[in-house]
Length: 60
Image (cartoon, rainbow, N blue to C red; front, side, top):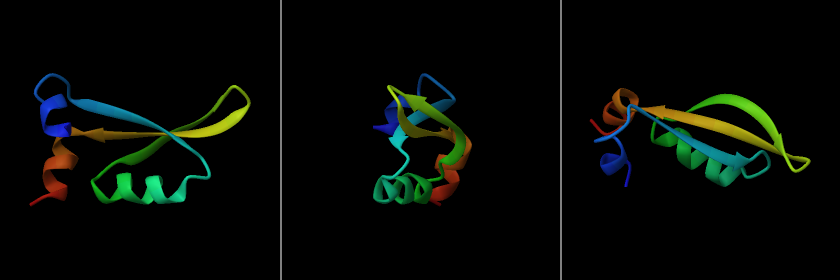
């Protein structure tokens, strides 16, 4: 899915619940980096971003 997205954009963002450690670890394994902390509807979330280059490097 990310390969398809990177045909059109250079950066993909993910919004994940702050306490969702399983998803956070998974997204970090494919090269995403923590970009910011936000609160949506009073619930803490983290925003991760992955760039086309870091995604490609994660799978070399």
